Image (cartoon, rainbow, N blue to C red; front, side):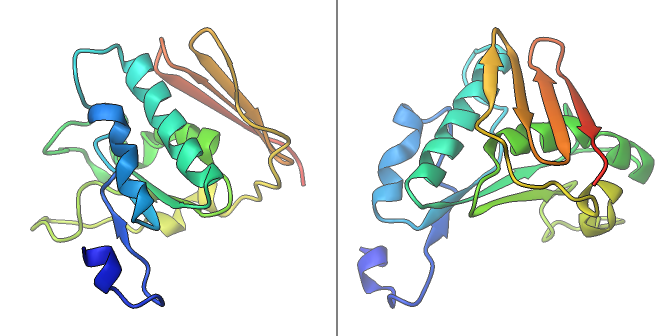
Length: 176
């Protein structure tokens, strides 16, 4: 109903895709322009590797259909509330960033934050100043490759690998 009432010039985005919902809540994208994804590592009693794999699959599927996707994450393994120092916040981005890079395509966006910006908090984080966001990525050389629970993807200036069992990421930047 809302989608029908919105002007065609407006973008309709919601917290639609969730690996823990029935069929990933894919049906919502029939009337939305995209989804942001938060809490994508939570859900039923699945191994973390299964939760992340399902979330990557949902995101890539939406992007392949021309939808927009915002992957929102905080420091890897940080619960709610996410009580970390700024130093811990900075040093805990590799895993969520590497997972996003398995998704990265046109219309995919990454949001790294401690908590939603409407929360009362002693500090907010502007992740746009992080060195990883200043480096050239280059075009992807193909989709991610999954062997067992290890994902790899190559970009023009970056090779990224995610070991879902060990919950570790490697970002190997190449010279421009």
